[in-house]
Length: 495
Image (cartoon, rainbow, N blue to C red; front, side):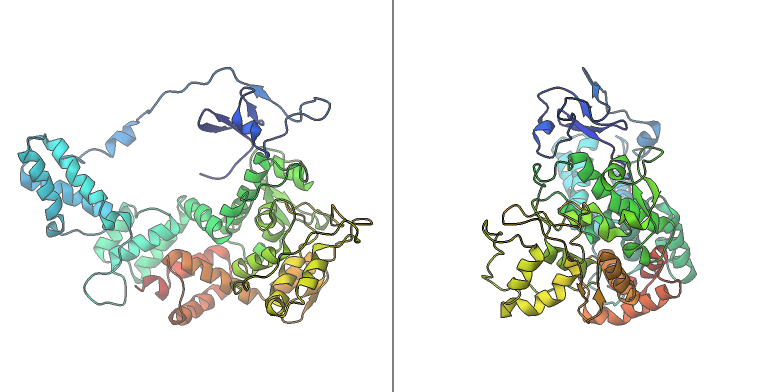
């Protein structure tokens, strides 16, 4: 399911979407008590967008289709089944549930539970459900178990099939992938054919949703709801649109197999009506997310200028350059800064009797602390480059400072990269990043590999990562080709 938010409403405990705008049901609706609830009327009482008033909604279910019913055929043995037939049914089920060949001896404890239930007078179907419950509470169902008592360096075909499937589809292998694993063709040309088939399947939308959310830390969007008085334009529809904007942008990069440069800079973006209004982009011609061409004056090229990315590193009242720098270092450059030392004092608010100062000015004073200076010198410029964007990603030229004397100070986004290369603003900062596209690609490969392997990378993985990068570079670091290189890599096949 793709992200296409255009509005939402809460009906009892169910949330439904609306393509025309927000659905208001009744005055007691709890969603309207949320500080980020959509603003429905202006100060003169005029509606800001189309509103639908609903008196009643009713639905029935569940509705089970014939296709759904067909999946249950053969799941439970017939009432007159012999113990041998029951064991065959359970073995078939276990091989699907555990995603690998299963020996009869592995099912003995579950079959014994079945026999015990039968001896206690239970019907066959009820006794068999106890055995099914045992199979589905086994670690082999709940986890992806890789390895056995035999020492080996590589995965077997069944284990590789599951690793590939949960990497690219976020789900178990399909019948074709099971057949390839069982037939021993999941190697060489056969492996390439299966990976290409999987990448062409619509189920890769799950990979796009899941990987993008984890890689970009999108679970943090909305963690600190922006102060409604400071940011009246922010509402629930905008927040969900921002979160989906990044995913839909990544989806487009993947679908078109565009180079990693698109993460940093582009002349287009993906936006819906709410985002176009918020960013000041041309009004879309249709509902939902669509590709929108950008001009330089829009200042919205690449992922780093998106509201979700800029907002997840803010605290609801102000932007946080240090947190923005840490995020960029971890996510884009693949380098996790060390944790801050203990007992470092917080940055004090601007005194009411002092001239208004930017947060950058306060950070520079903070860096006078010897315990902080070394790390902040590497982190702060990565975040200061985005000071023209406030806590929810709105463009500004002056930083709004509540307390203090004088006018709001001018934003200064200039700085130096950790290696000394200078930049004057976010646009030049992105150019500095693209000068290191090999490093950008390597960081992306490492994030992909961590996601695919479901573990942290180690020093022993470096040779395999180098091989993946060399293969990906042949195709100019195109996104889908990088994913394919990881899927086909030696690293993917190792235990």
